[in-house]
Length: 465
Ligand code: HEM
Image 1: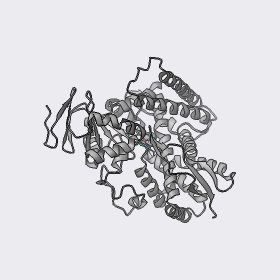
Image 2: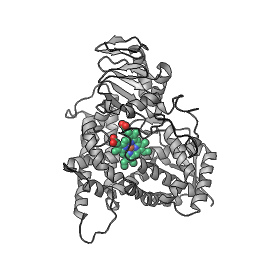
Image 3: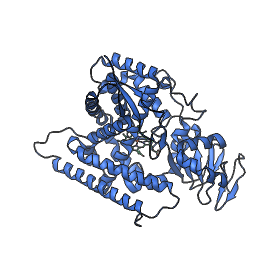
C-alpha cells in the first residue's frame, strides 16, 4: 500500500486504492446527469463538497480533481516532469490533431516545441495586428449596413472573425475558402470527439459506428484541405514575381533541426492543431468578453473612454496595445471568469503528494482553470467581474491562481497572439459600437471549449463619436 501522510485512510476499490475523499460510487451515479449537463459547474461543486483534492470512485483507474493553486502549480510547473499527457482527453484530441504540439506526450513534444517556437516569436506575432484590424473592419462593414439596435448573434460573428484571423495569419489571404472548409471539418470532428468522451463505451475508430463514420468523413475533408493548402504554398514559395508577406506557415515550413524539417504528416498535425487551439478559444473568449461588457455597462463605458482617449478616432495598431491597459484588463478578467479551455488533464509518471494526499503513479489528474479561478484561496469574490484585478498597479497573480493559458512548460504557445488579437478586436469594435444583451443570461456549455448554449444575441447600438 502507498504511504499516506495522515490526511486520509486509504480504502480499496476494485484494483485501486482511494487515497483522497470524494463521492461514493452510488453518489457518482446519481450525479452523472448533473455532470453531463454542466461539467464545469460540477467540478466546482466537487471541490466545495470534498476539498482541494477529490478522487472519483473508478475501480480501474485512479482519477483525481486538483483545484488548489499550490497543487495546480506543482502539477503543471514545479513538478511538471512527473506529469505527461497520456490521458483520454488528449488521446481523443489526437484522433483529430494527430501528434501535434497540443496533444503530444513529453518526448515528441520537446522537439516540436523547439522547432515551432520561432513561428511565435515577437516579430512574427506582431503581424497578427494589421490582419486583426482589417478583418474586424470587414465585420464592422457588415454591421454598418444594419439599422441601429439590430440583434446579432455575437458568438457567431466572433467565431467567424477569429477564424478569418487565424486563417489569414497562418495561411495568407488567397486560401481563405479552404480555411473555412478546414475549420468546419475540424469543428465537426471535435463534436464527435466530445460525443465519444461522453459515452461510456467507445468503439475503435475502424468499427463503422455512425459516429466513427462521421469522424472519418470530417477527417477526410480536413486532410484534403490541409494537403491542398500545403501544395498551393509549395507552388508559390520562391516562385518568380510572387511578392507577399511571410506568414506563420512559411516559418513552419522553414523550421528545421539536426533531424531535418517537419515532414508532411507533422505539418498536417501542426496546422490542424493551430486551427483547433487558435480558433474556437479566441472566439469563445471574445464572446464572453462582450457578454460581460454588455451586462456591466459601467465597465463598457470606461473601456470606450480609454479607447477614445488613446486612439483619438484612428484605427488601433500594435503600438497602441501597451496604452490600452484597461481594455487588456477586461480581456484578462473575462478569461478568468470564462476560461475557454475549462479543463486540462495529466497522467502521473511516478507517485507524488498533492495537498497532503498520496497520488500513485499512472493516475489521471484533472485540472480545471474554471474551478481554480473560482477557488476562494485564489481570488477574493471570485464570482465578481472586476477588471481592476489585472490593472498594471494590481499585484501579480500568485502562481497557480490564473491559468487560462495553462502554466509551466506546456503553456499555450499562442498566448501573445490571442491577447493581441483580442485587445485589438475589442478596441476596434468599441470605437464604433456599444453592445447590450438582447436575451436572457447565456448558459455556459462546456464541451471542448466553453461556449454559450444557444449563442449570444446582443443589440448593436451605434456610438455617436
Ligand atoms: C484565448 C485563447 C486561447 C486560450 C484560452 C488557450 C488555452 C490554452 C491552454 C489552457 C493550453 C495548455 C493546455 C495544457 O496544459 O494541457 C494551451 C496550449 C496550446 N495552445 Fe492555446 N489558447 C489560446 C489561443 C491559442 C492560439 C491563438 C494558438 C495558436 C495559433 C494556440 C495554440 C496552442 C498550442 C499549440 C498549445 C500546446 C502548447 C504546448 O504544449 O507546447 N492557442 N492553450
